[in-house]
Image (cartoon, rainbow over the protein chains, first blue to last red):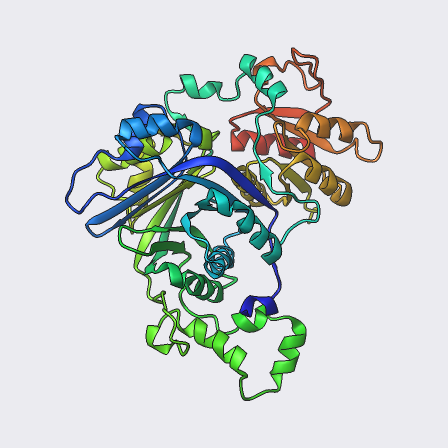
Length: 370
Length: 128
């Protein structure tokens, strides 16, 4: 495994979200359907995380709710079957290092663990998996990432003392009286690159590995969102700095430990392991150059240039209506959303190149930006 | 050129830590980060920051307890503490008492949801 020769990636922690259910919506092209995020907002149901992919005429939406909303959600959606139970595992901070989601996908793929959503915020990468897989995912993360010695996976629990205290001084009080939803600022990054690919469950590890090896220290990612698409397989969208798809020929050498680099510096013929690593990197752009016959999932050419709107607000993760408000503002101003990812208290929206400013103006109707 | 002051940002919301850190870096501060109270105390002892921006509700150890530890430690008590508090309306002074008897010796506070520009002013004042 290539990554074993490299320094472990340092992260600060693992967070857990337990007892959730998953809801997907994939209307057929041309079919009108009330978005489930609108339905949930009208019924005051908060989505813990959400993702929306638009590609051509097709769209796909997926979200997670706290399990306490399970029956209510099923009833308003008219579902006869139980909504599937899931949990969320998050790692932070990612520092925009694309190796973090890449490694996460590799780990899940190699272990045969199916994920239902992988989504990032400014600092966090979250993955939604079946409840039964949570412990296995934690073990994988603990073995593959460099965590502080004192770290233990953390699950937010309600502190009864503080809850009683906040009943008198509610931290979320502003929410109930604010005319506009408060944010810590709406950020627009223009001219970023959106990469899009589709791959099968069996190729998830390869996709992660290729993502891992295309990482460049000078190019960050700003949004990753991967979900099972309407067809079999995953749709993966990655928004990066411009030029992230251009191979950095020194990257592999920089990542290697010094001993290995010295050992190889005098060699003119590559050993098979190293050949495989470089070939994997080349396969980022050229499916026909993968010597292992594995599915190559990336194209080095960006899918398109995009502007990315991201914002973050108090208790966004605990409040309903945030995502719908954002989508409503943008729809009203005819700003199309290509990819949306929400987790924690953050929302990221990729819009076509040049429409970032229009998107921010549209969002200003529903959100207060200092 | 003056020395860059080190600010420790402590909050259990990693995205907020990131947002505050980015803002501090644009103001030419060095930034350290912690995501819960226990980790905050470790970083404070190791790195002796000039100022700590400290959330109140956090896992493992809350902000009140962290603040108390800092201010009761002779080696740390000079570190300025700015609390990110949800109870601003009940705060009348910087050494304040809550309705249930919780006290803190924080040097300053800023109500949540925070205004980043206001926070920068507070930090700059305490570090100047």
